[in-house]
Length: 86
Image 1: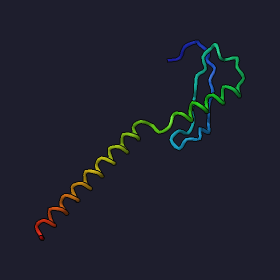
Image 2: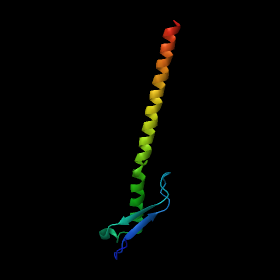
Image 3: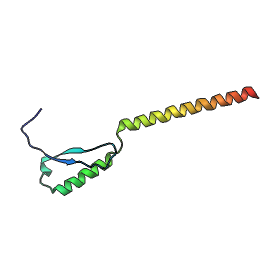
Image 4: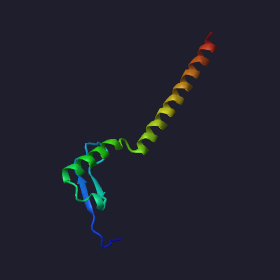
C-alpha cells in the first residue's frame, strides 16, 4: 500500500555482514534534519549489533545436539562390545 507520506530513509549497501547484502532504514521525522554522516554511522552501528539470524543459531544448536547424541550412542555401543569380549 502506498500512502501520501514522505519518509527519509538511509540505505546501507555494504553492511559488512556475511548474511545481509544491504539494509534500508526509515528515519523518524523528528531526526530527518540530522547530518547524513551521523545517521549513516548510527545505521552501521545498529547493523553491526544484529549478528547472526536467529534461525541459523537454532540450526547450529540442533546439529550440535544430534552430533552429541550420536557420539553418546557410539560410545555406549563400544562399551557394550568391550563387555561382551571380556
